[in-house]
Image 1: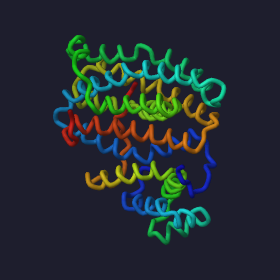
Image 2: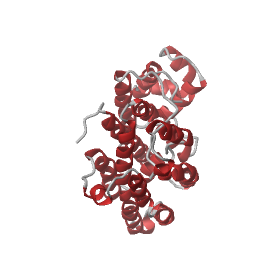
Image 3: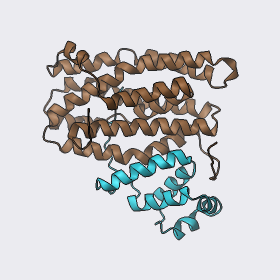
Length: 233
Length: 86
């Protein structure tokens, strides 16, 4: 049993998770600065889209797996029904977003069949694969840490404008990022509201933190790999 | 909150990782942090309150990331994040 000598939380779980994620944001900020300063940024942007597609194409199947697991927990688990209801709605919202990345890559001249044939990196597999482990072998609520980490930190409009300027690519190649800069704040509010309403145990609260922190860490590592400051394979 | 210096982050983590100091923090947060040499600010207050809610497992991960950030020469957080739009 994990020991928690500190005071019990007096803020909502959504706010607590936001604060936990804030603690690790400097790592992602550092990776972003390196990415923006890299003279190969035009090519790196395409790589960023490719790895984003690898994550996006896994997100709906991952949520479906979590939903099935949540439904299977029955009435004995106080989180199962609420989690399954939320995921059912979010699955619909996220469907087809992987296709957007393919269309953006098409603008940059990338061949769809080659994208789909290329093996995803171990870092992407670790980011998504960890969620499968936690969902199937701990509790599907873990996935909310992953979703919150991703939904609450999309590239901002100002960063997208900077990317357009620095890469020299047409704005059409940034459609997915632009759409998400508009959509994700709404999704984040929904998630925070859900988290505040769930009767989480302290251990489940920790699980959310670990899941979100791991997701942001892997996001940073995947960018560091592109700019060559982390080992990739 | 990400604007807290790496040095202060490490000191706060030392407090939260020590059972006795964490207990002292619970009863008198400001004095405990002052005794630990942390410069008081609203950002420090929020960060320390957040870390006080973290489990040892989470703190251990944060400590490793903090060490990495120090080694990479980062002094504070930036405002741009190339997250994943999925």
